[in-house]
Structures are given as structure tokens and as C-alpha cells.
Length: 319
Image 1 (cartoon, rainbow, N blue to C red):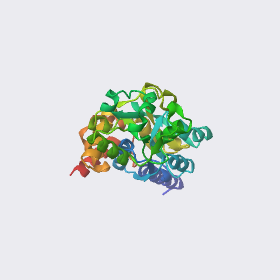
Image 2: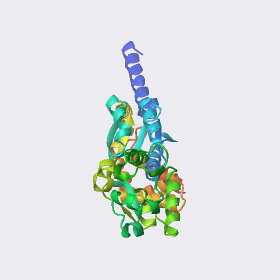
Image 3: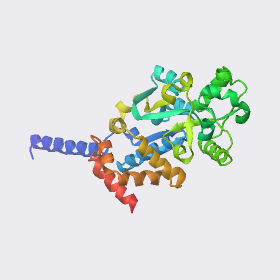
Image 4: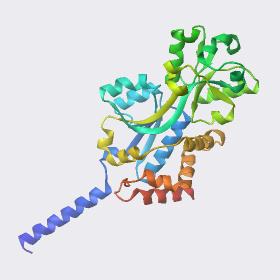
């Protein structure tokens, strides 16, 4: 064989090996493991599970750590967490601001619009005259000077405590009761069964809106924002993640959820005791058109069409 032919053959083999290697490793090795933060709210647990199942179908490995909001952002800044799907705005402005300004946490897009997040009461309390934040102090004894929140470190709890500390609405003698999402919801259900008065942190989407008759209070715009704490939820990533892991980044750019979808998933997780992973698999299997939309211009880790890889995976886990 001539030197020229040998050289061409060597180049062809090298080119084949390079292309084969590229197809086996679509993204840099550090992108093959996607690390999520879940702050323990069922809506974020649900969307994180859905995204994780899509990624598993695409050939990625995922890991989800249960962290408080402050630890989530410090972990992203340190490079220990890649993705957080639960940036509720505007109430989380105080949590994300310094990281956004420092460039250590980036926002991809709003993944949910039309949410709400503010104080709420059972309907019988609302009908009795508690319709706004200003009405709380008038009935302090019936509320036992308490406002029920969720887990320590939560942004909603911080807003409630700031109201108390600044004596907003005359609430300086009230106290914040911190527990967890599940603990607060149980406390509300117990109070409703006994026809007791309670004021608590409410939000939508969440099954609490259909499990009990409840109403949101007006007048909290300075703390929770206008339109009864009207909120959008955003996808955050650690600095440069979307540019480093472009395929996962494309998926994150495509992900938009709906109130109906999240309510359905939370209903399965909270009221039917379905594990988040299984609830996500079931929902994805029932909604192939949405899966296809989310996977537009997305590849599997091996460089093949993500739609087929995910469909095969969902069929496998369904068996």
C-alpha cells in the first residue's frame, strides 16, 4: 500500500472513530449527570420528577437533593446544583437577587405562568368578614395570634415574618408557625373539620384549593405582589450551564408547564400516594403530544432523536 493510501486510510479510520465517539458522547462528560434541587413543595417535586424522567429516557443520570431555598441558591453558586425549577417570582426576589447580580445563578425562562401565592383563610372565615390583610388584627383572638407557614427558610415565611417585625397591618403580636407544606396543609384540614379559624400561606397550583373551600386575602400587594400574589415560576441554572450543556439546555428552554398539569400531578402525589417518579411516568405516557413538544430539537445523550428514546423508555417503565 502506498504512503498516500495509508495516510488516507488512517485519516478515514480516525474520522470514523471521532464521529463514533461524538455520537456516544453528545455532551461533555460533566453534563451526563444532571443535579436538581427540590425545596419540598409538591409542585416543584412534580415538575422535577417529570423533567428527570425525560432526561432518564434521553440517557442521562439525574440526582435530586431536598434543600431549603437559601441552600439551593448557595449550592448553585458553588456549582453543586445544576437546575432549580421552582423560582417563584416576585416573592423570591430577596433570595435570588444577589446571586443573579453576581452572575452565579442564571434564569432560563418562566416555566409556569398564572400562579398565586399569598395568605388565605377557609371560606367560612372569609364569609365572616376576613377578606383582607387589614381584617386579621380585628379577629386576632380567633386566630390565636398565629399565621401558619411552611418550612423554615422559605420565602413566604420570610415575608410573613417581615410583616410581623414591621407591624404591618398591626400584626406585631402575631407569631409565625413554621412546619412544612404537609404539616401546614394537615393543620388547615384539621381546623376546617372543627370549624376553627386559621390563616395560612396558600398558593396555586395546589390540591389545597379543591380539598378545602378557601379564599385568598386582598391587600398584601406590598409583600406578596399584586393580583393576590400573582406569580410566575422560573427555571434557574448555575452559571454557564446552558452553554456548557447545550442539549439539556435546549430541553430546559422548551419546558413550559400548566396549572392543569401540575394540579393533576400533585393530586396523584398528595391524595393518591403515588410516588413522584411513577406519577411523572404515568402523566408522560398519557400526554405524548406534550412530550414531543418538549423534545423539539433535543437529542438523546447518544445523539439520536430524543422522542424515540423517551418513548421507548416510557414504554419500558410502563410494563
